[in-house]
Length: 256
Image (cartoon, rainbow, N blue to C red; front, side, top):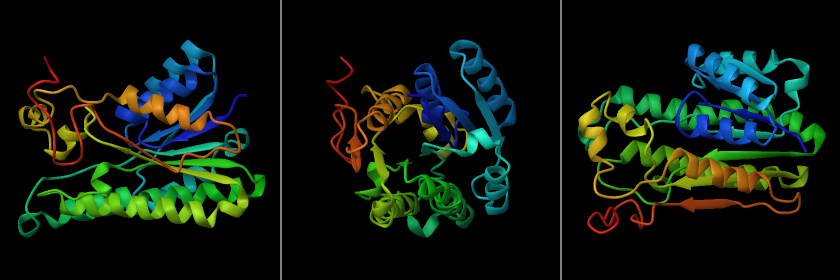
């Protein structure tokens, strides 16, 4: 059955892979992000390839006013959102706590925590009215286990873990599913953003082992979203075979 999927951060990485995956199954989409050109190009591609309906909304999830306005102004058809994929998020910097830039902290808090909350808060009331819906939050294994120089990023993903659990409890009586997806190392723009455009440093993160791809995560998200109405996966932790947790990797054998 065709559904309406709302995806934040859809212009690249896991968000883009989710858009492709859900559109290929015949679902209609609302794709959002900060880069209008990329969104419009993706919209054109998805509508042409899969003959689905796709609406774009360009905004930054950090901006509460812009979030509320974009969702309020959705065409009537696209307001009946079945699945919300809270994918927008980022890491900035990899510094010791005492050396970290405050601006990086604030951007991570405003995007990873407040942005997720703003979007969810704007969409959930309509799901409650329909007594149906599924919220899928992108967390991280960094939300379960801190690592050196991870400080504020780990804290924000710990908050996503807590928010997901509290949403699940608060929305239980409304028959709304909440799923937390916690990936390990995924080779996307994530590290390039974290290291502020330093491609060489970003590439080293994924050396000598086979990381996850955005498609690996979108496949898992699609699976969680495709289960019967009485089944909810509350949390899924996904790592490459070469990664046990945030600290332990096997970087000698897995790439052979």
